[in-house]
Image (cartoon, rainbow, N blue to C red; front, side):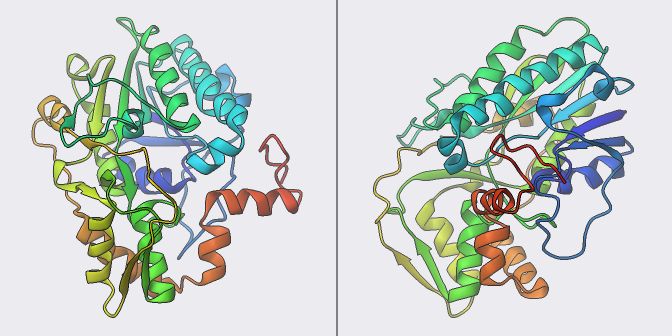
Amino acid sequence: MRVLLTGHKGYLGTVMAPVLAAAGHEVVGLDSGLFEDCLLGPAPADPAGFQVDLRELTLEHVSNVDAVIHLAALSNDPLGSLAPELTYDINHHASVKLAKLAKEAGVSRYLYASTCSVYGASGGDGLVNEDAPLKPVTPYAESKVRVEAEVHELADDDFTPVYMRNATAFGYSPRLRADIVLNNLTAHAHLSGEVLVLSDGTPWRPLVHAQDIARAFTAALAAPKEAVHNKAFNIGTEQNNVTVAEIAQEVVEAVPGSKLRITGEAGADPRSYRVDFSRFREAIPGFDCEWSVKDGAVELIEAYRKYGLDKDAFSQVFTRLAWLRHQGAAGIVDESLRRHR
């Protein structure tokens, strides 16, 4: 297929583009460029495409493609809470507009990167599946719920949307994010020798490697229509349903000499959920995630050492909110998060 990949210069998109290409697809990128300079290691060979803000899309951007994979978003809870109106403009309204344009252009499949954080306040020890009540606790998660609901109404015989509810991502990407839990804890251990947990460590988190997300989207792209049409799927594996304290312990074991410190200073975290991922495995026979949390911690510490992650880059370049503030102060990004260079 000829596939439009939005957010192709982001954390997940940078990993997904070569996976799609290796599967034989022609990838057309679309990205605003907000995070293209957030590099750890060699710059990747990005696919050709458009540099455009998601809010400025036209029919031209979705013409002559067979499918759209929509990753682009403000993907950070603190940022979403700081500027909720921008989160809804970009993550909600622009995402629905993209789906409508894609349908108008004759695109047959629209894979939407949703999130397991739509279950945010589920709590308890039971596994939540795709039919569980949606209880988002952040503007980011709420925006995903709204998009799913509105795009659901667009589905018809010629337009197949699929809602990929990714677990919390982890793992190395050339365009790193260090503000997601495993990546963050491993970076802190690398830089300080301490695995620092600010919550009490008890909340459950489902995790999934960026490579496994890429493989899942590639599988959904090629799946028979009847297997995926207008359906939501949790993306991850039950083996990676872990508490924050368990994630931290994996980091301790991956970084010799590091020490675990759980402070609890951030208070109780209402986001706690364990997820059932069986529906996607049933829809896509033979698919399963390959990466464990342990594997990811080892991969990350090796990358941090190899490419020389330092404290300034950790706190300023690979933390989304800090990076955007820096870009704003430099006049590269305006208050609406539009890029001018």
